[in-house]
Picture (spheres, rainbow, N blue to C red):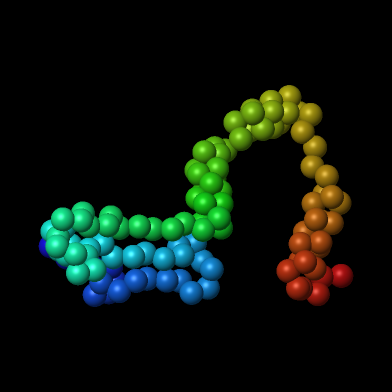
Length: 110
């Protein structure tokens, strides 16, 4: 049984640009003679080499998955402040941050 990856016919795969996967090498079929030997040698298993950037990307992905979507403590604090009437909006601060963001994004905010 042959495995195919993106219709590759047993060739090695390489990102060529230092991406997350350095290379994927095909395994020799079980029971085939490797390098002209008599068939007593076991076939080499498939191998995948993951680069440091690939491992870092996996760690970051896991950190994002582990982070809650909503900060419950912050929501609770805001709900209490709104309910007690102590929540105030800093309109000048919000406007300033909006202008700063606009300028950082390349807009012409004045």
